[in-house]
Image 1 (cartoon, helix red, strand yellow):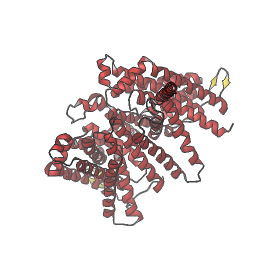
Image 2 (cartoon, helix red, strand yellow):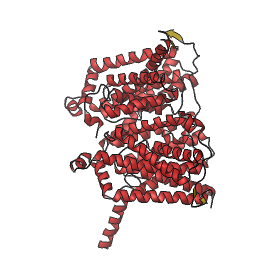
Image 3 (cartoon, chains in turn blue, cyan):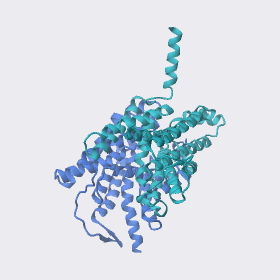
Length: 294
Length: 304
């Protein structure tokens, strides 16, 4: 039993991170209609900025985290402003947007590499012995991850479904033209979703940096896992993407019970390819085939 | 001739095989295949294992590597041909991550992270290609064959169908073209040449390990195709030269720590990629660049 508790707990920890990334992806996809790989930059940048303030400049932890998340949001908005907005005006835009977002991701990664070097960094938190939670060993940081993610998703749901701005945002995602005629500031909504989505990615980056450590190359896998989770759940639909994140986390961590742990990443993408084959619109996605198939 | 220059030339030839074959899918057919490096890896490992474990000659490994890659390209086409650009991109990227995991973990076959050392230099017609000069000739010949075959394919009627699939898949379908089958064929052919490039690489470096085939390499090859010009084979050659040689090599002579040089290299090609997408989407040598140049020459002749 203890083994299963541990596997499920590990799945929830990984799932929380994937879900945070996937939620950010989906939020941005809902308005921009392309898979924004540059989302991985917010993950890396938030972690490294928080590291700079907390470890190098000796700021209090929580202020550093806020600065890191804010930096991710600002970066997301800037990228949108400088790169994606001009491209969105071009006619053949889908591939150009995806590919330019890849370029941006690589550029940010390269800058981080040049500034911080290639060696692994950490926040240097004291290593604590795992506590027993429902028969599984969990460290305090992991517990924070598991508890924090649902709180953030709750707040996000409150915002999206209960506030006027949230409703306007979903209306814009549903039909931009009609939203515009109803007097919704579509451009502001775009900035809001990019900022919010990037902030979610930033939270994920900082949480992972706390639990493991920081590397300039940490964004690539995170971005792919986030995207995979979002597609498994149903991209463009935030709650579905979040569930997709947990599903992916659980699938990977329970899967390693059956195959060598080196194949952990492969399990995730294996599941993903199965989804592409049989259910490209995602687990919870409605049948909008033109989204996925060409 | 300088050994360093010959080495660069050989690498350029390998890059050209990779970029032109990737362009067949990406540029001519509009399939954003980000798993190209996986086929390169399959070719390299197949060829290396056949040579090291079974002692088979180079040309058998070369063909087997190509065919094995083509087979996987065909398999990968099943989940991906029905998908739109973004999904295809992520799906193929996922495939290359799965393959990387297999190469690292199937230690009984691939020796995992230890890699495969001692891959013999090729022997053909009783001639051992052990000197750099001879290998350069071999690499150049294979690059030339690849280029010629791909050129023939792209200007053939099949090539026009490929472009039709890229430009308007629905229209191509209404004309009775089986666009899924076209895409599957393109992926298979494209993968074949990637496998050939892998075999060429393995027998040149004589040592391969999973790090030579990381996702970052896919992006490098991809940026070559993009910067050179999608839908233009000459563009792919230009891209391979600019991003593979012209940009990174001068950085080597700067006296800087490796993380800075690596970062600068990546920053430069990422920046170039973004700039090309935004300012010159057709790439350095676009699909119509030569055509319109020829057109201009003709026009000037007429009116002169």
